[in-house]
Image (cartoon, rainbow, N blue to C red):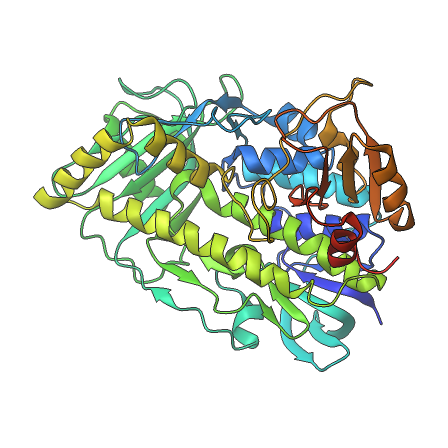
Amino acid sequence: MDADVIVVGAGPTGLMLAHELALAGARVALLDKGPGRTGESRALNLHPRTAEMLALRGMLDGAEEQARTRLETTHFAHLPVPLTLDGWNSRYPYQVAIPQAEVEKVLEEHLAALGVRVQWDAEVTGIEQDDERVRVQAGGKWIEARYLAGCDGGRSFVRKELGVDFPGLDARWFGTVADVVLGVTGEGIATTWDTKGSPRMRPDGSFANIFPIGKESDGVYRIFYSVADQVIDDQRAKVPEDEVIAVIQDFYGAETEVKEVRWGSRFSDASRLAEHYRIGRAFLAGDAAHVHLPLGGQGLNTGVQDAMNLGWKLAAEIAGWAPEGLLDTYHGERHPVGAGVLTNTRAQVALGQKGIEHDALREIFAQLIKLPEANRLLGGAISGLSIRYDLGGDEPVGSRLTDFALPDGRWAGELFHQGHGVLLTTRTELVAEAAPWTGRVDAVEVPQLPDLAAEAVLVRPDGYICWVPGTPLVEALHRWFGTP
């Protein structure tokens, strides 16, 4: 076969998945229909849980070096009460403000270090699969592999070709996002990148928001806007530069100088969730599996987390040690997460509608999220920190491992750089019990486990706790890491 896995789509989700597979020794063919990187900023943030996951693989430092700033809060439907992110015992209780292009650069550099490079101009035009292989036609030739992963965005060819139902809501209104370079700016335009920006709302439902996203004083700004009753015949068509300029000057003053419109794109409130994340030997991840209004910047983050969940499981199957049913847990764990993202974005859409009833709803909701419990609930959902998988057993099983300092000066999260599972224990005899799984599970004896009422935890490669004492350790090792 030409590869173990064909990954279609070289955005953040595809890059992260390819990295997880290559880190475990799988052969990856990473295909993308584009001619190369566009440099377009696209998504603008890493939420705390995504930051934690990148740190598990030693990637976060590179991303933070390229970050524009840190945002200590996030928002829900742009209500005036911010959501705090500091109640989840995370080392990264903030958003890393960084354009998607920079995230892709960091991921691609780490992937190249593992010997994998993107195959550009490789548009997929055909897919076949049977019980033992998949075949993909791309660039005029057929490529054969054991598995296929569609990470090719909301209009996913992989999803459509495999006939996966994509139920949900059609678009009811459209918005536009663009990056521009400003010279002279009108009064009231934000000078710092934050969660508020410079919002402008009008009674007819039109709105705009603009804020700087460049480095220092390079004049690069992001504009979001929606014009009431604007009809978008073709969401894929190029956004007219004169439209972007006219909107900026209309909302922020005719004196605002637009030197350049770097790129523009339409978005909508359409929301859909793939019925199945696994179809035989093929999988869907990222926007190929779920689309929604880009409120709270959850798209990129959910996709990267999809990739972390699928990557180690698929690599285990390829290596030959995956226990029965492991691959099916990808859909079982991540499909509910995708559904949750659609629920919170749909709620935000409802809060943003015009009308007296919606104004009343926003007023009441703004009061509710002042309550610490409600604020924490929504902050945990948007940031990904509250995700808990149903892995059997009580807390903390199914929850993320919170990072802590080790006696040797490292952080516990650094133990996951090789993509293995990790057993952290205060009991020497448990280290011996895990020895047959060496190479899949790294057993580390520690003097204590802060914030955990347990003498040991077994943690999966994606950072989620899958066992604490109460049942035999070897049962959990067999369940998640196969037969040694």
